[in-house]
Length: 83
Image (cartoon, one colour):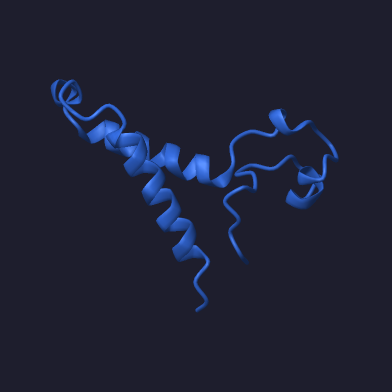
């Protein structure tokens, strides 16, 4: 099964990702996070839980979000590799 980064991480029950994409069942803004956003959120949470608070003040402003999105994209790419 291919992982599509734009598909919803937790689609509404009763509707497939494709049906939601086409507008059935709910408006696009009420369906939640995409898989890419969810994966990045989990990576960001992990990063922030391991970095001492004092060190957060001295990091590049967008470093952690960029790293989180990079890892999310890497995970999606790996999940889509053929076995």
